[in-house]
Length: 472
Image (cartoon, rainbow, N blue to C red):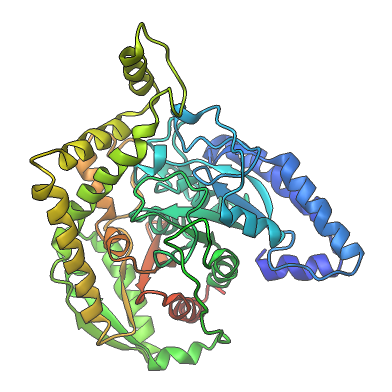
């Protein structure tokens, strides 16, 4: 069911919010033994929220935007009174003392929070295999990854263990698992959504966003969580223009296709699906224009320098003394070493070490400072492209969901998964992953990119595309 389906059924009293919550909780227990999309359930919270919704309906009060809608939350986002591990042994017993701003908003909007979803440890990974608690499996093929780092959120929506989910995207962590699991995922413009109450990875790149089965549901969730928050100085107020869905709007749309996105390294099966999707848009009247993003070949290296540098700063606090689980040693240094050595995973330690190196005296200018200059060039590439087009389109991932364990031993091969997604985080732009079709029974996502704060353009284009391919 979609958000609107649930709303209509609740108002008609076809079922109660409590019955719906119980149904989804049972479904999670049945399905999640195999998929491992959830790290923990929030049964008491979901049922308490459902009771409030049922009371509103009984009293004839207005049903809020997400009233009675089962929602999962990535385990890097704080929900008061619920475990928040960020997929790490370092925080395996940490209970959130307050709600993140986005959680406050979805609670106020009536969502039923059914649980916290699995993720790569501290959001570092592209497959959810870096979770300290085991990988999440792809609902379309349990031998394959669900993507990362928000793999649990995407899988929970795809497996119908919830209706919507809150994910978090640092370099593709919403869009990639959305593509791999065949759901919709939005990485909003940097600053469009508050980051207060989110366990930070790379502060200039992180952004919370919605995951859902349809673009309309993703839009509804985004409109609940967006907006300025006095507790997050990087957040801003935006007022997107409200437009009714109009598939004919596609006829006036100029869509840019970056030639760099269709070069060596793109799986022919993925390329066929994406080009087919673009052809459908062209047949519907969109104008397809080739554009160039000349510095995109530097994006991956640039991203990982900035990402790892900010990680080394943000994760310095997890030393077993100030934050995180402690493993006592014979002295203070031994306590630091043992706590970090035993409680942090290999990928987390790798990024902390490389980031510390990039920020160290003598190397800062050669690495981090230069990376920030390249970041400005990448942003300029998009600005020039958007002078010619309304939207840029291309693949989310260069290949299909891969087998669990296939890339674990090669960090560089894993990093290549993010080649089409990281640029948006560096440039602060919004990106939407929409299911475009499948190859070999596995989902393929189309990535739509708009100028800063162009989320409404993405939603309208995405809804029109859904109509074209018959998913709604």
